[in-house]
Length: 121
Image (tube, rainbow, N blue to C red; front, side, top):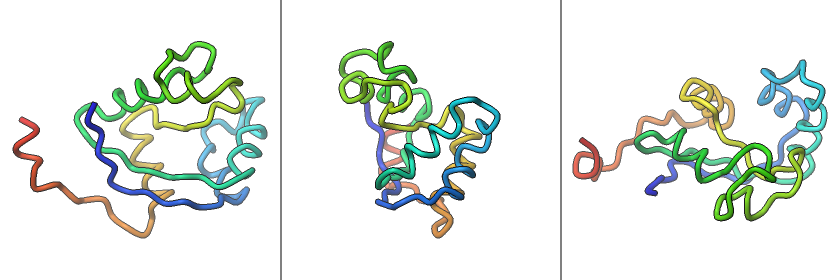
């Protein structure tokens, strides 16, 4: 699967930022655990692009519950517990747009590879 990376940075996330990132889950009982986990160490934030990138990305990442993730997926190979499932991936294009704006406010993502017309119809 070809999923080019358009943006990448290593950052430490503070509580306020984490709460914004997971705002849609704030009423869930596991919200505080998510926030604590994401602020517990550095985060590698990335922007992937490509045809059907949300669907493709979620296949690469694996199921939310690592116990249900296939071998060869990131969660299937590197995670054990649902509350420590190693990676976050946008669940829709709309969510991805919001998350890109939050994580990468310094750079508008309008770049297109010169190879784009050779790869995509």
